[in-house]
Length: 81
Image (cartoon, rainbow, N blue to C red):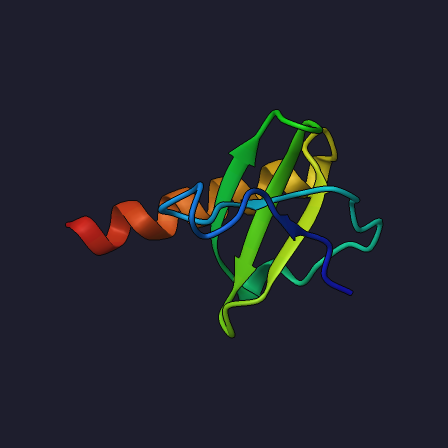
């Protein structure tokens, strides 16, 4: 399941921004996650983006979410070296 919506119209917003509206309760396979965005509005959430470009919103305060963020950050750091 994918949970997000677009805010604003193309004319009022030059860059359409994805926002989490409802959150997935499923634990995701962190090996398939390539990126994330933190969000506070309208709800405190993390939007993960998987290898196929699919965005999945989850609650930011789950233990596995923090582990996934750390893994993505470490992967990004290794690519910069």
